[in-house]
Length: 177
Image (cartoon, rainbow, N blue to C red; front, side):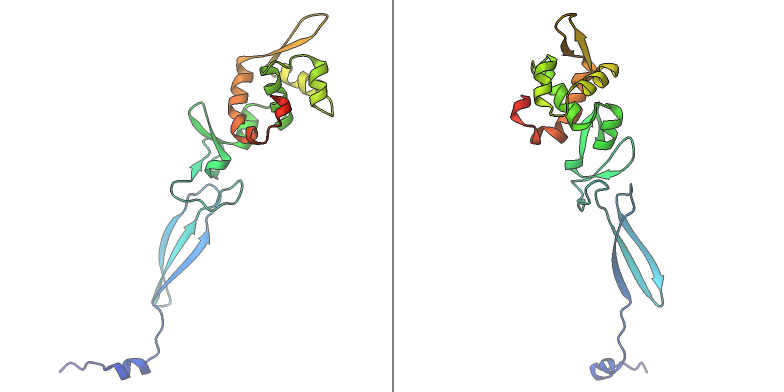
């Protein structure tokens, strides 16, 4: 005959959990997931929570990307699309070494028609010349004219503006436009 335990007997027995859940941050470059394993007569479910490797925000299913160059996991605010691929700011800076935000601002200014050194020096307190030399050497701008130097943007410069615009345009001072 099968003995069935009553409610009173069950309450007297020591209750111990047989299933545990642990939430842990995921490693860099991995988008998250779940793992299960057995531990001391119970089971553990590890839930790997992905965070943006750039800003630290928690990533949801519809707000996570992998940088196609460095494989960092990034949120929508920290990624842009360049040449059909999702790329983080660090990789955009490696692809288009314009000199950071100041170099970008100079490119935008030249693109918008502020094309001589005097006007550019007014916009950049520390002086625009070192940035102009770097931009020219790397093929982002061309220098025209012998007596009155003027600058114009190249196709590579236009690509750089397009790549950086997501990161810098919202904080762009109106004087650069």
